[in-house]
Length: 639
Image (cartoon, rainbow, N blue to C red; front, top):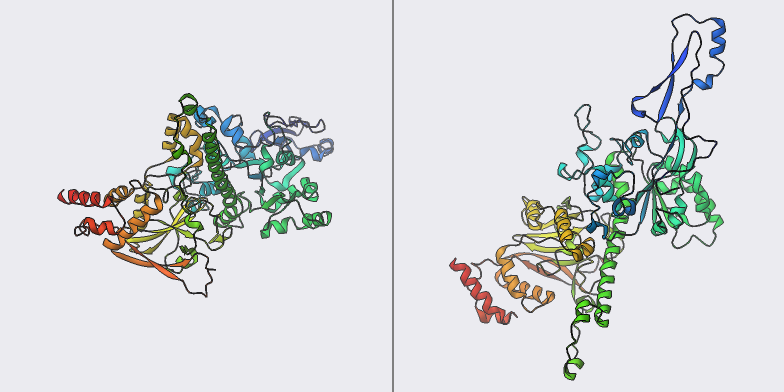
């Protein structure tokens, strides 16, 4: 295997099998023709009937070599593996045309990408894919439609170029509109920048047509070398050692080819079948043998091999929605969860390194500026650390299972917004607004409604949370972040216009990705950290609420600001609903009653604040800020 993706072909298998021979007689001959969908790849010999009636001698000659009249095909090679290194950083992958490279400027080259966690394997490129130099290039192949639904883009209009009619198999089920259509280069870039890689099981073969069942005389790609880090990828090694899962894209047939060429990998205990029903069935025989060969069990870091429904248009027994559900469950959701965890570790690593550098005085500003001498009294004074709310006992907790019992007729609604356009975890509880409360899931690591819930690790339990509840105007929303999108459920208030209200609140009419690109080009430091904080948005808050929240934030911290504004709402706002709470440490049993409840109120209007006075606000804990709130109220009422 070379960096250009070519393979050395054994001498007994010439790279191109000539089909130009002519079995000419006085009565018949052959000519080479190309089938419409197989240009340059499959050549067929077609008999041309003779004008004269054949003689007995010519009949005998025409039957000499019947096999020579059968289809003869060229030996084809698969593409080189696609990963973020050769697609986005170096842009050396053959599929990335120079005209399409708009993500390889200098600011992008410094971007930090996640380790490869998932290797997606096709069997061998179809004739259409080879002709177009694209993975899964056939317009009816479901791969890029599913990837788009899971990663926040749309492959195409899903309309036939010949008839002008929509592809009924996909068209009505795609999550994103025409404004989210990306060209192939950008689709590939979106996939690999999230830690996915593409390749094929079969590196080269002879095949008539595009069906996997027709593959003959195949040579596999060095997939094990890739995953074990011994494959040289343009001078780089160890790239694939981070792979956690291999996803076989073409169902049972693809699984059979994988077992055929990589059975020893199973037997060595370094890979094992996924837990899903299809993988267990496809790999049952080889797994039984592997278990006998490894009586002490498989290695702890063994790669899971997952067989998913085929994306080929020839595999029509399952609907598009069934295929998408399987791919999302076993490929994209766990893969994107790995990326989220990696990003959080990157942020923590950056924070820890910054603290160490500060302690050592390694910053340029510290190195060039004279150090100020502090008095002995000040140098020995230490602030007593404030206890983290997540570590204090008897703190009321809002549990997801309790919220699920409220307004059960209202289901979760998908905002259909990809992670790079909105991440509530980086927007709602980071000091921009103070009306959202973290919802705790009862058992971390398990799935709720098919979405994996990650452990909360930060001090306030906010940045690692995945669900929040809070009031907006006269409604109460529950918002949930998944690896692929953001969903909401209405707990209180009118259903009509609820989605539009939330879209306006998040300002989803503004596309965020181009702004990130512009800012990254203008600021080198932001370019390095932008990938770790995707989807941060400036909220469109109610002006009155935003103004008074800002006043309360003076010389303050987030928990205390939140408490002040909660009292402010309760005193002057309109009651909306109660939500159940439990005391920290309660086992959360369904049979045990909730310990208490929390009342939610709308933010007060200027008219409802008309009677508020400074002494009253001071008693609520607003301190010196009470005077500024009263003065600001009076100014606004005069206007």
